[in-house]
Every structure is written in structure tokens, then in C-alpha cells.
Length: 94
Image 1 (cartoon, helix red, strand yellow):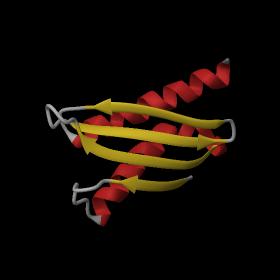
Image 2 (tube, helix red, strand yellow):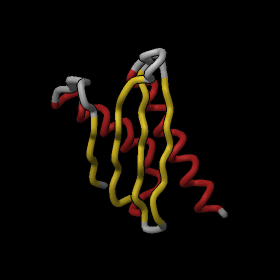
Image 3 (tube, helix red, strand yellow):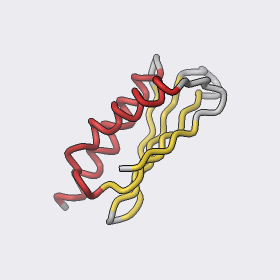
Image 4 (cartoon, helix red, strand yellow):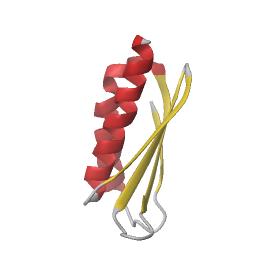
């Protein structure tokens, strides 16, 4: 599973980036080898400035994206990771 993180203005250090990758990796681990690439885009909602995370996953079946916001950055990341994992799991069953 290869990761890219787009976080303009977030000022993430290497340790924080690794922690984000780990959190997303753990959420997607049940999908096994079906995930080739994960792109994490971080930002803030224009009106409220709440952290926003969009996670796009490239699987053998195609692309899948989920977006979430939260009171804190890791909350937004965890929510988006859970959503994209749930969608991928639903598609696997269908």
C-alpha cells in the first residue's frame, strides 16, 4: 500500500505524517492486497475552519473516495478512513 499526503499549510512533520498513514493503514488493513495506493488530502472547511480529510483509494476494482470533517485533524482522518473502508467492504459483498 503506497501513500501520498497532500496537506498544504498543515505543517505536518515526518512523525505526524507517519502517524496519519498508520491510522489509515489500520482502517484499510482488512482489505488486504486489494489496495494499491492511498491519497490523503487534508484541509479545512471554508466557513468553520474545521479540519477536513478526503481519502482516495486505488483498488484493483477502481477508485473510491470518502470525505469527513471533525473537531480535530485525527478525528477527521479516522472518520474518512472508516467511511472509505466501509464503502470498499460493501462493494466487495455486492
